[in-house]
Length: 168
Image (cartoon, rainbow, N blue to C red; front, top):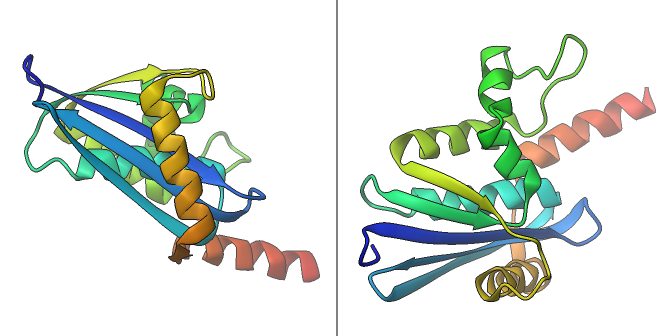
């Protein structure tokens, strides 16, 4: 924790080709110490990696904490701050009567992580010189390009279903 007790979390996600190889990067700062987290996936989407960056940052905290989470993803910020994710969950992961919400597996994990901590989300403009966001961008892109070996099972399963349906 920092001197005021707050953990500062900075996160970013990347997908090359979207969908394509992807990665997330996260930076946790507390009490003058920093911890970097990142991983790459062979096939995923940018939004999934943005979500996973926030999830991994929050899940890395060993005890409930006060967290200021900064991300350049309006998808992540709005999904939580505007209550979209809670509404989708309450509606069986439906956005409306016709459309399913995307990424319910990750939204569920993020909601659980947010409920465990006192999290304030802050949107920062990407690629605008914000030092920690730029660092997370490098972590995410490096993971996507060099270590994209993990499997995003939920994405690949959903993609296989879409591919099968398009062939029918």
